[in-house]
Length: 372
Ligand SMILES: Nc1ncnc2c1ncn2[C@@H]1O[C@H](COP(=O)(O)OP(=O)(O)OP(=O)(O)O)[C@@H](O)[C@H]1O
Image 1 (cartoon, rainbow, N blue to C red):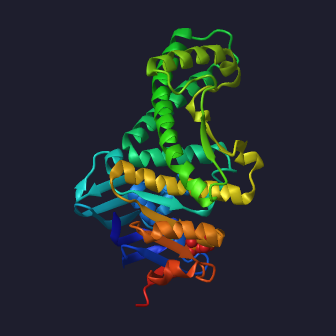
Image 2: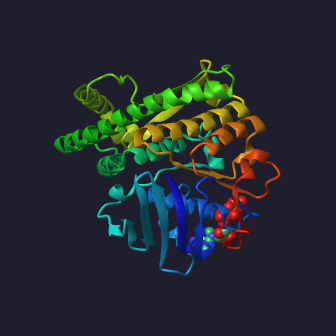
Image 3: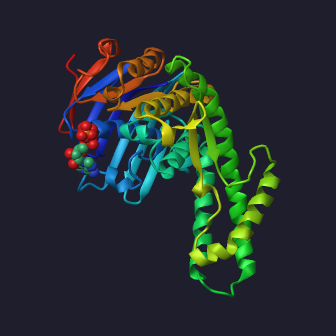
C-alpha cells in the first residue's frame, strides 16, 4: 500500500499543502520547527484518526482556524482509495471513497502506517503507559474493533472509579451496586486481556528472529506480557473472568480505601528479555535501541501478514539516531515494497544508498518544495 497524494488544509503550521509522493522513499529535509514532524503526523492521523504525540485533537488545527482537513489518495492492491479526515472543535469525521463513516472504528484500519519516532526508542526504558499505548495503537491497526472494546473498558473503569472515589473511606457501601460495576468491568477487561495476549504472541514470533538477525544470532529477545498476577494465557475466557472477579473482590477493601480500581489491564505492562535478562534494567542503550527497532520491524511484518499489504513506514528523525548497522536493517526494509517517509535536518548522517533513489523535499516554515 502507498499514499500517492496528500492535501492538508489548516493542519498545524500548514495553511494549504498539496504533495505527490514516490511509492518508494520520500525524504524531507528541514531545520528544526519547520514542519517535518507535523507532516509525518498528518499521514499518521489520516490513518489512525489520532495523533501519535498528543491526545488533544484541537492542537492539530492551525491556530485561529475552526477546522483542519487531511485528504489522501491511498493506492492499494485493488485500486485507489481516497480518504479524508476532518477535525473540528465538535469532533472528527472520516470519509472513505467519499462516503462518510458513521463510526471512526470503521474508518481506522483502511490505511496502515508504522511510525518510528524518537519517543519509540523509549518504549523499553520509558513508563508502562508508553508500552500500553504501543500495544493499543498496534492492535487497533489490525483489529479496529479492539479500539471500540478499549473505549468501552475505559468508560466502565471510569464509572467504577467514580463509585469507589465517592465511597472512599466509607464503612457501609451499596455492595450490590459495586458488584454490578465489577461484573461489567470484568467482562470488558477480559476482552482486552485476551486480545493483548494474542497480539504479544504474534509480535514475539516476528520480533525474535528479526532481533537475532540484527545481533547476528547473539541475542534472543523474549517479550513478556504482564497482566493481572496469577492469570494464565491459556485459560478459557470464563475462567479468566471468574479469576479476575475473585481478585477484584479480594482487592475491594483496599480499592475503597484508595478510591480507585487496583486490578485490571489498565495497569498492564510489557517486559523485554535479552538472553534472559531484563533489558529495561540491565540492557545497554544500544540493546534498548535494537529492541525498539526489532519491535517496529516486527510490526511491519505483522501488519503484512494480517492485511496482505505492506504498511507505510514513517521514520521521523530516527535514522541519524541509529548506527550504520541498524540503519542498514531499516534500509533493507525500505528497499523492499514498503513506502517510506524519512525526515531529517541533514542527509549527512544517513547511509548513502538509502536516499540514492529517494524523492527529496525541502521543508521551510510550513511550505514544502520538491527540487526536481
Ligand atoms: N496548531 C498549530 N498551528 C500553527 N502552528 C503550529 C501548530 N502546532 C504546531 N505549530 C508549529 O509547528 C512548528 C513545529 O513543527 P514540527 O514539530 O513539525 O517541527 P520539525 O520540523 O519536525 O522540527 P524538529 O526537528 O525540531 O522536530 C512550530 O513552529 C510550531 O509552532
